[in-house]
Length: 185
Image (cartoon, rainbow, N blue to C red; front, top):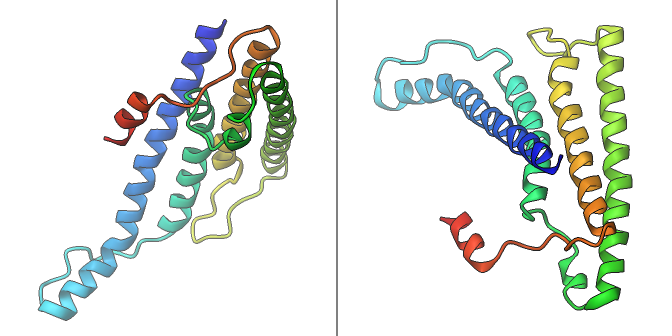
């Protein structure tokens, strides 16, 4: 079961990465006309980007939303979220374990709340046919699916970690110095 959940977290992280690439594409598409105008006015070069980027900023925001939420569970599972380690690292033994349980229980409650209301928002947007206010009327439930799915998968990751700690397993640790160095390269 845990390996299936790990694969789910990694898949969500990969999809989040794809949305990050889409975010870059939308931003580059959005700034193209401005760069072309600058080239034309500054150097007298013909504008290589003679188009109007309609709603590109809006779609970049949707991609950023999906990217951020879908990557939550993957980064949490790797211990890469900002955590309360300044407090926890000073504790040892049973007090540390109790503090981990308390933090994970509170995290489960808060991430469950976020997941519930994200799913509810997405569902309500679909029911009422809510559309964006930009130049392109886009159904809002579509980008909200990424937020809802990411929040729900993150909730699963936090609850899984809580279950591991409650069962006597080792609490999640921060990345080792070797892993941290590998991540920074």
